[in-house]
Length: 556
Image (cartoon, rainbow, N blue to C red; front, side, top):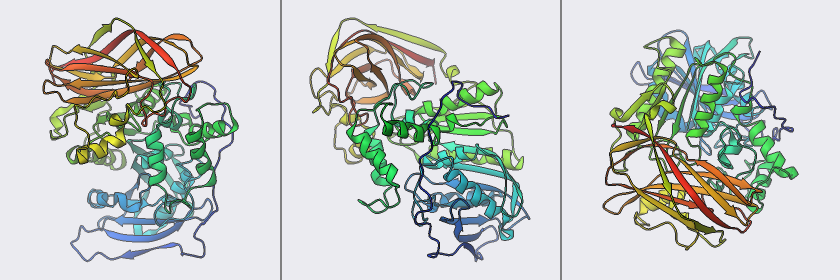
């Protein structure tokens, strides 16, 4: 019997999908053409072409790399990120074939040379595509696939596809072979898409109340994934309608279109709500401390859910400076994660090497100019065990923050703007982020010791507001003696229908080194735009009783 990851009974409405449109039937023919390698003996056989999804016949552009030694090989499937293609993961082909895996990479429906329209990693569409292509590749004798040993990995949108592999781990190929998915490796992806795109600050209750959309990300991704702007023929009509609605409206869970959006994003595009886990499928997760699109909570939510099924569930977690902006993705750290991925696949698909530890590993976030070092990776039995103690600070007095529609106070620290700013040196690092007086409440405290922030700082505050809805945002910075200012972490919390309340805002977290001469600079604001779309309802709010709890670790 399958076990639901989320314990509260939640009823979702019907799925919203688009299939059977621009399938490519009659335009291209299915089949893979193999090109014999001309190089050394370890150069893989490469086979490329179109494979038709069994769901609706949509032609999907695929490439398979096959080792030239041995008779049957475990199959590894790599899925690209949003707006990418099968070529996005081609750089890993030699590593995987040298390790003895047949490797399949394909462009998901709606992207690059594949036909159809994207459905955002839907459990009824893209999951069917994934199983269909695995089955067809396993049935092809030239590709030498062991159908009993399949693994799926991917980053971001591809990581959501990897999670799709966990929903149905055993199925039958077109020719009757039994396919078994042995492990999945989702990297820098979401577990609950409504909560990831519309955070309300409640990890275990990500839907209600409706949080503010991550506006810069949702619009950046919408533009970036469009094949032919402004038409965007690879987007279904419902996706265009959803995007237009979220731009124009105040988020809620009441109107028909808002309900359709929540049903679609949570009910059919989020692994957190699916019936998985009963077969104890091994899962390796990697998430970014500094990923402002899919922060650490997306992985922590899954780890907690899986451990609730079985305290000894075979799941491992890596946290580092990887993922979406503002993550650095230093090449050395990306290589470190890929090598861990390869070790994981060798063990769970081939039984080779040592069993990977089922723990939490976290890398210290260093400055842009500091190279990644494996010596900065700390291991702990659980996420909470990264910290060895806490520091508590309290701040007296009352400060007032206002909603001002013209305010751009958060723009310097918007993750996408930050990327451009750093590349172009557009904004000096010591320019304050609070341009409009009254919009940001500021609190500072000297550090006084060399220590690591190790986990998720929490900010508790009392708020009295004139608004019926407010998005409360916190940003925590480190101020250096030289005047530089670095964003350590941030968090957000949605407050509805409360004239006054005491709330705790949990930040995204980090493993951040503080020096004794540093000053912690805390900002509380109801405008962190354009990163988080502010409420469209005006408000004036008094902030008091502010306290901050820092999980810390002494030494490295």
